[in-house]
Image (tube, rainbow, N blue to C red; front, side, top):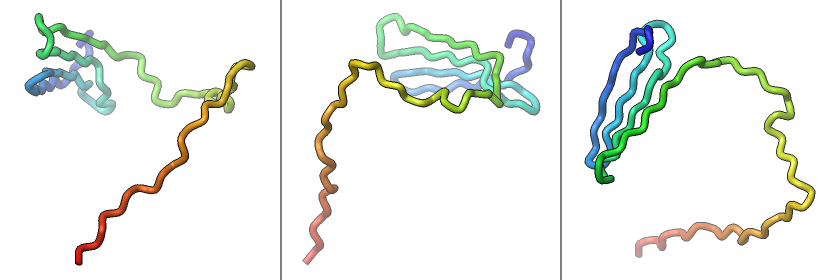
Length: 90
């Protein structure tokens, strides 16, 4: 796979076939995914090549902090209702 030795695995379901290429060696990272949608006429395929893995990314401490827009409004949600409990057998 682009000069990298990989293990190629293929799987089938009634609706989708999918394949994955996993790098051989000390870093067994996914290198390619291929999906074939058999439920659609023509069985279209989608391919994703994966490269340049960063296994130790650095983010600023506020990178994932949510800052809503000034005109944002809070949505009122329904109150949580306790899950129904099955009745005990008599």
